Image: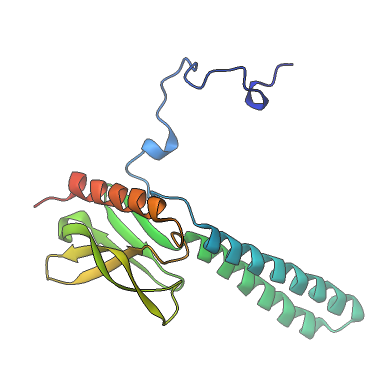
Length: 182
């Protein structure tokens, strides 16, 4: 039984079907960049801690303290939900607009309300903490003059990865240029 996906024998462009890849569907929301190592590491650490809390839940439940086990289970579920939400944080784009997903909030702006998407030099927060440093930010300017921050080069996705920030900012700007109606 040949396993071509495990070998390098097959050429990448040797497929016979020209089916559009899932990321070519412009109707669905997608993040035009990969989550950064800081974000993935923080989520993995949170999931590791949740596994210890689940182990403690099992020990407490076997000891007979059902209410304590329920509290520990609730804490573990909150930790798992926070880790999964942390992986979804960032800017998402589609044919319908741009969506800024935060840890607790999500804000969607249709492209028709956007005037421009641009990269600017300004003080930005380092890893989302109160400390600010000089850096680059991708701003979404709305029709009413409001400016919304989409990405920074010092957040958990792009810290120490300036090329990845440039590619992501260019990608979001390209989506804005393509779907924004002036």
